[in-house]
Image (cartoon, rainbow, N blue to C red):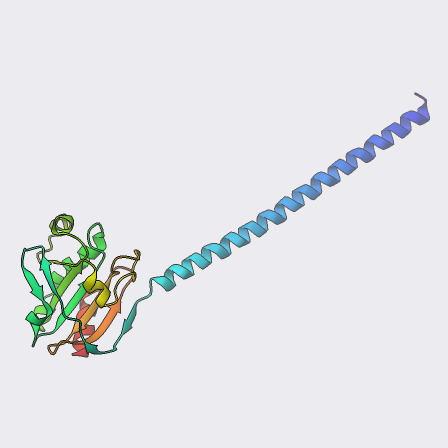
Length: 208
């Protein structure tokens, strides 16, 4: 190889090396852009999910009134409870997901501990779509003494509580206030799975 050929070969190698370096630099820049884009998309998706979670967990209520649907249900105590049993006295129906929902049972346990309901003459009736054998262990775990009303879905549907929580075919976490004349005064749904009993009592008393 002559000196000229050697010089030409060196120049060619340098050019190829520069081209490879330029290509590698371009690939790295493209990867950085892609990473920034994916990170941005991820942030947007997370923000959207958080916003949707907050939106879907928001409480909703209605004051539309009308005669409350009548019902008679068996209870975990082996008795039968009818809405008509409470004529002349206000009642709060507490629809919830039932067995396996710890926060649902804790809600009732805390309601029992609030003496304001009894003082106001308001009875809270918890209603679940379970058998007694299914729900009783939850009641024992949280020390709930109030008998639960056992629904096959008919009453939950009549009061439009199905699909208001995490499960399409079950009630959500909601309350229905019925006055002593059997008129529905208020309904509130709480997908967050909790309502402070003092707030519930205040809502009820303000509408009676």
